[in-house]
Image 1: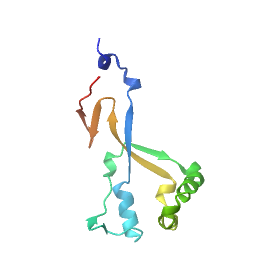
Image 2 (image 1 turned 90 degrees about the horizontal axis):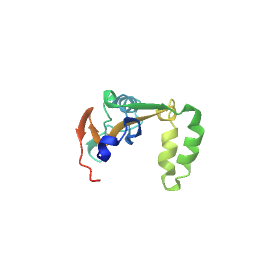
Image 3 (image 1 turned 135 degrees about the horizontal axis):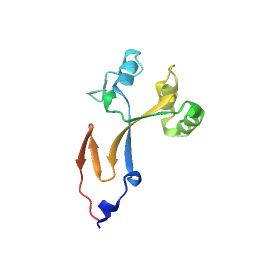
Length: 117
């Protein structure tokens, strides 16, 4: 029996990309926190319907703030990041599943990817 057939569903590794929902980008633009364009390209997020996972991190916002502030080369950006209330990034983090086992997930579709064992 091949490795792939023996591979149990619950043990399939998953890969998630961190994303920013379109709804959050829209809010940040409306409040003039971020620009409409960045390096000549429109600022846009991931369509909300494609977000597969939302994690409540509100209990850990202090730890997140401390971690972000430790990046000395990015202090100005981090301070700007904390300057606007309510900050949606201090309550939740958003992810999109990109890989599940040997299946690539693209915009909600499952596509088999090649794997060499």
